[in-house]
Picture 1 (tube, rainbow, N blue to C red):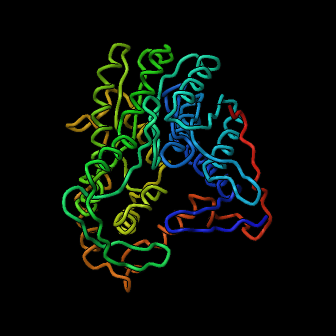
Picture 2 (picture 1 turned 30 degrees about the vertical axis):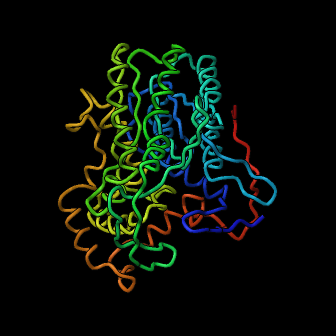
Picture 3 (picture 1 turned 30 degrees about the horizontal axis):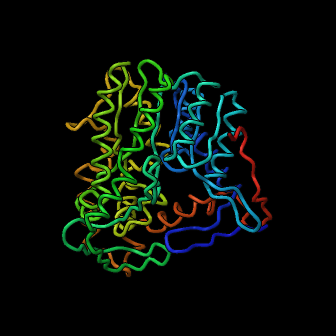
Amino acid sequence: MIIQPKTRGFICTTAHPEGCARQVRRQIDYVQSKPSIAGPKNVLVVGASTGYGLASRIVASFAAGANTIGVYFDKAAEGSRTATAGWYNSAAFEQAAQESGRKSFSVVGDAFSDEIKAKTIDLIKTELGKIDLVVYSVASPRRTHPKTGETFSSVIKPIGPAYSNKTVNFHTGEVTVATIEPATDDEVRQTIAVMGGEDWQMWIDALREADALSEGATTVAYSYIGPEITHAVYREGTIGRAKDDLEATALRLNDQLGSIGGRAFVSVNKALVTQSSSAIPVVPLYISALYKVMKEKGIHEGCIEQMYRLFSERLYAAGSTPVDEKGRVRLDDWEMRDDVQAEVDRIWAQLSTDNIDELSDIAGYRREFFQLFGFETDGIDYEADANPEVEIPNLR
């Protein structure tokens, strides 16, 4: 079938298998062009099929030579419906990893469930023995609690007064003002339950109880802070409360893992085009301005560049891992440079529908959004027939 992008707001409902595979191959090629890393050897990535999770798995496997297990919730093609992008990404990764002689396995299902945790731990014990790095990179709008059965839904809202600021329809380039009503106390509670640190803690508890963590094991989860422009809707909003909980969990896990010489970190990463960030009002417009500034300064990074820098210069660099005053790894250091933010602020004050193409990199944002789903990828003939039914090697 001929597969074209079909969008609904910030969601693309189709994905292209060859385009996704080409994007994965590009990330692998980047990592293999860099010096190898003396890092982890058996890695679990929870949330492994897209974005930072996928990039973490690629760096672990192709820069450190690690065996990996990826846990993710994605769907295969069915009838006229394509598989999800994460399915195609994972199929391409698994094929490349096995061709290179590395062990790799995929566990598809609800990472929040006790069933998937138990299934993954059985696989670890059978195939790898123990894990020395756990990457927690789950992005989901909902979570069903494995003990109580309550289903939580996250929201993207400010806390306190309603919030208004510029935003953009990145498909059309239209700049408008968005007003977001404040969250209720229950919406804050539910967002923390979905996006906070409780499930990360449950994963580490389950792994420790099963004696599936190596001596000196490391675990890392991902967060974001961002500039004042996005604080009301992000860091000071419902998502920010969830990230506060995630960071508190990291400190607690770091203490708990000390008994085996282990470590726990939250890595604060750069703003990037992801399915999640595309859904947050204000953020796509900020990223469009940020991309223009960072590209002009020659310091722009995507997921794979960020994760290679995390592994090589932070987690597995010689000496101790550098952290900020709250114990966080700061990979957003280039984004938050004073000169970068001053230029973004200058652009932000002027941005409108009439000048967005000139003042920002909205075209680059739009292209990266479609590339998340395998479209607008160089070297792919999108008018040719493509087979949407792709199998994932070593799917468990």
